[in-house]
Length: 424
Image (cartoon, rainbow, N blue to C red; front, side):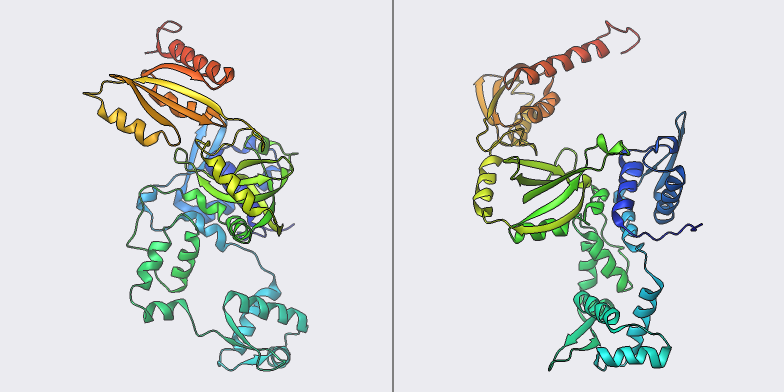
């Protein structure tokens, strides 16, 4: 029977476990139904070995729940970066890595045939030329080796550029890397370079930081490359509820990427894309996207990008509703009252947070907020923060107004004291 290992073969699986059980789900062992309990135990031990003190345990009637609990303002490095350091490798991979670097350590360029023969004669390690060629090309693409081709034969030598050498050569570069390692987008790259240079971040700390974003960095490069090259992307996505079903394998989409959006309310990031099959724009949560592959060039990309920019004028958050190319806008009007002499901060907040809406003064202390949006539900989520000041809600649709009234009635029952006098 295979033993436990901290190394992983695919980052996607580990990303799922960290997200579902340590961040969003906080599930107990008995609630794990997707695979065997032994699998849950192995994955839990693996993540615990990476995160150490960042893991918190809560015992309840459901069992022991495991989650991640850290104060981002007091840690020098995102603990989730360690998940990227745990990739597994074969015995041949690790042998070939050290033997090739040892053969090239003298700084002299060598060709494929020479290196293959030297592996056999000096170390007794027999590799076919194709295996060695693939490894040399991989290292050349990553910058570990420099490939030169003066004639028909390619020669390889170790790159003289190292993280430690560059930080010693350029003043301030190590501080720049320390700052970059705290960045929310691809900060793991800065942390890796910083570690290669033998440095640690002891200068920069960010108080408000979404640590979980680094789990999305594995899918971001392919999406951004496709958008910059005006190509389609194919990916598989899961919904938060359906992901709990062990039989659910997600939904495959062929889409044209437009932009990465970040919610200022939740911090979650979304891919805004056009779905040709459905003839509409849609947003997908990045943390539920996997298996991203760059597709064919999109000949109509410029027209779609222009249409996307026009659509943003009617998007309050990240939702495009259910509109198609010939969709419609739903107007919504909120009337709000406030004391202009003592509550000027409320007026400032309305002006700051209305986004695509318009603010109009009706009379002293009475203001109207008007929105022309594809999804009025998003506006109402924000509007509920103004409860107690809302005079009327007009427009939208019956479902939006009905849900708002229902929520008000439920709050009255919970906090009004009529349904349960013990609640205050």
